[in-house]
Image 1 (cartoon, one colour):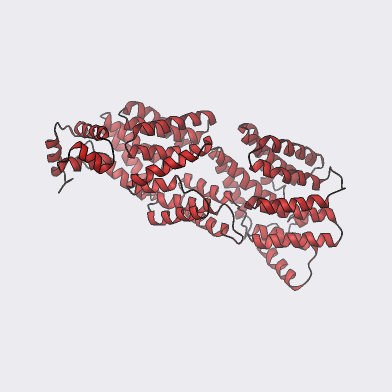
Image 2 (spheres, helix red, strand yellow):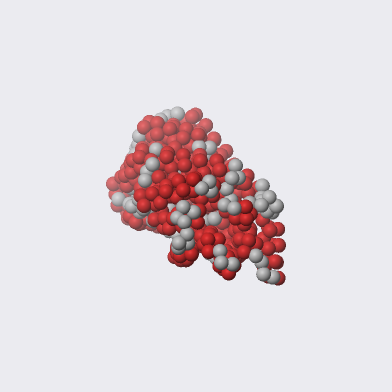
Amino acid sequence: MSGSDREGLGRGPSERRLWGEVFADLSVARREGEPSAEDLERLAVAAYMVGRDDACESAWVAAHQAWLGRGEAERAARCAFWHALGLFFRGDLAPAMGWVARGGRLLTGSPHDSVAHVWLGMLQALPSLFEGDSEAASSSFREAGEIAERLADVDATAFARIGSGYALILQGRTPEGMALLDEVMVSVTAEEVAPMIAGIAYCQVIALCQAVFDVRRAREWTDALTRWCDAQPDLVPFRGNCLVHRCEVFQLQGAWTVALDSARQACEWLAGPPAWDTLGSAYYQLGEIQRLRGEFAEAEKSYRQASVAGRDPEPGMSLLRLAQGRVDLASPAIRRALDEAHDPIARSRLLPASVDVMLEADDIEAARAAADELAAIAAQIDASYLNAVAREACGSVLLSGGDPQAALTELRLAQRLWHALEAPHQVARVRVLIGIACRELGDGASAELEFEGARVAFQELDAAPDLGRLARLAGSSEMEAPLSRRETEVMLLVAEGKSNRAIAAKLFISEKTVARHVSNIFTKLQLSSRAEATAYAYKHGLVR
C-alpha cells in the first residue's frame, strides 16, 4: 500500500485512538462541502470503528464514486472491496458479491499480481468458505497469501491467513488452522494491520475458537480484544457472532453481570440500522444468562425474540422448561431439535441438554444414548471443554442408573477438566452430583462438603435455580437420603393411596418406571411397604 492508502484505512497517528472525533469532524465536513475521496475513505473507517454501519456503507459508496470520478479505477475497486467485506460479515452475501463483481470489472486489464487482484480472489472465495467448500476456498486463500506476502501487504496477508486457517479447520485439520490464526493474531496485537482488519481478525478468530470448543484460546483473544478496545475511546469493534461469543466467554468465566450487560448491548447493536443476521444469536445468549440467574419470564421473552430473528431457541428453551418443571414441553422440543441436527458439532451443543431432560423424564435409555453419542463426538474432537461436558453427562446417567461408584469416576474427571478451564458454574454443578454419589455410597460427611462448596459457588454467581435444586437434593437434616423431585411426586401419590397404574397415568410415565421409583424410595428411606411410605410422608410434612 502507498502512504495515502494506509492513512485512508485509519493508520494515521492522529486518528489511531480518536475514532469518535474523526467520525464527527468528517461527517460535518461531508455535510458542509465536497470531501475528497481520501477523506471519504477515512470517514468510512471511522464509522466502522464507532459502530455506525449505515454511515460506513454510505461513505464507502461515496469514496468509490469519487475515485471513479478521478479516473482511478483500482482505488475505486478497493473501496468496492472494503464495502463488500463489511456486507459479508453482516450476512448480506448477495449485495456483497455484487460489489465484488463491480470491483472485479474495474480491474479488467490491470496486472494480476496486484494487491487489488489479491483481494478480488479472496472475496470471490469467501462464499465457498461460508458454505463449507473448504477445498476450493483453501486453494484460493493459499494462492492469495503467497502473492500478498511477495508484495509485502500485511493486511492482505493477514486476511489470507484467516481464510486459510478457517478452511483448515473445516477440513478437520484444527491444529494447523489454529497455528495460522495464532500467527495472524501476532500481527494484530503488534498493531501491524489496519484497524478494520484487526477488528475482523479478533471476531473471526474468537468465533472459530468457540466453534471448535477451544475455550482457552477464545478467552485469551477475548482478553486481548478487551485491552484493544479499552485503549481506544468510542470504539465499537465487535461484529456479528463475535459479540455473542464474547458473552459466552464471560458466562463461562462466571462473570455473569458482565455477560448480561454485554448480551444486552449485543442485541442493541445488532438490531441496526442496518440489522445483522446474528441478532437472533444475541437474543439467545441473553436468554441463556437470564435463565441461569432464575429470571425465567425475561429468559422466555429473549428466547422468543431469538426465534423471531431466525435462531432456533434450543436447547435453551428446553432447559428453561425443565427449570420450570415442564418436562412435558421440554422433552418433545429437545427431541425435535436433535432430529433436525445432523452435523456432529451441532448435535454436541444439544446432547447435554437432552441428557438432563431425558433423566428428568425418567427415560434413562434415551439419556444414556445421548451421553454415549456425546462421548463419541468428544473423543473425536478431543477438546477439553467438550470432554468435560461428556464426562459430566456420563456421570449423571450412571448416577441415575444406580451406579454411584462408576459415576464418581466420571464426575471427578469432569470436575478436574472444568476446574482447569476456570468454569465456576460447571464446577459447582458437578460438585452437586459428586455429593449425591458420595451420599449414595454411604459417605455423608464428604457429601455435605461437596454440597457446601457448590452452595457457596452458586451464591457468588447468583444462580438462584441451582440453589433451589441443591436445596431439594441436599434435603433437610431429618432426611438422610432425600428424594429426587420425581421420587417426591411419586411419594405424594403413594401417600394418597394411588396404585402404580394410576400414578403412571397422572405423571405420563410407564408403570415400570413408577415401580422403579417406588423401589428407590423404599431403599433410600429404609421402608418396607406403601403404608410405611404414607406414614413417613405425613411425619415429614410432605403431605398435610
